[in-house]
Image 1 (tube, rainbow, N blue to C red):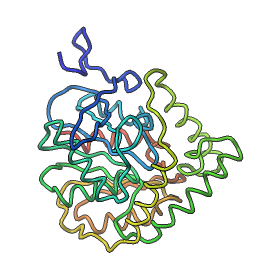
Image 2: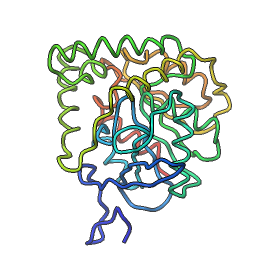
Image 3: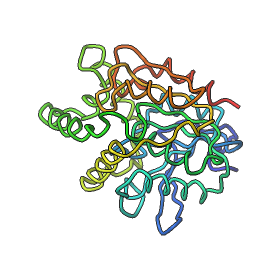
Length: 288
């Protein structure tokens, strides 16, 4: 019986109940979770700044896991994974490669969000044959205008969240109008659906190291994304304060043949606000 099959033979697609597993490679023990049928090309999810296994929206994960082998994982030094957080996005991409090869995969699809999409870009450029299809949400290219401002935006919103006793993601991911506030509350509630075996939050030092890596990525010379020939789906909200929405359009121009979706009246977490519209699109895009 495969690890994501239930005893009665049906496939487990509840992210709230997915077991946390570990695998050790390159001196690091990586924590990960699996969902869906264990066959075919897996979809590996690359998570955002400060995020752990518990930060994936089940309304995005579960529809994809109905027909695909889904894998989420903690980067080195984050959550239940051991080691120290690297100080560059390239090193994070190297870690992701180590993790994927340790699981024995030669071909994967990638679903990535925010910092995860920066890592995904570096990984695909270095190992183009590893990746078949690519989803890049809430992100921008290396050297993208104003990516380095993510540090000041993040600290400002952390302060605002602390003062109002809210989750920082309510400020960072969503507009502060009535629609955005409703979407934010619903999103945070979905992230709480898992009640057992929750991941441990990222440490302050690890979080600060990630922020510096993003800043460095934003201030670096651009990568040559014209080399990417992979089918690519790019998505964002029209008012992303963390990684300006215009950078999604920039990515779309640079990656030939890519598809671009911009959701109205939404921010960095546009795909979560519009999960009911985005999930079917992602499922269709990632289909064999």
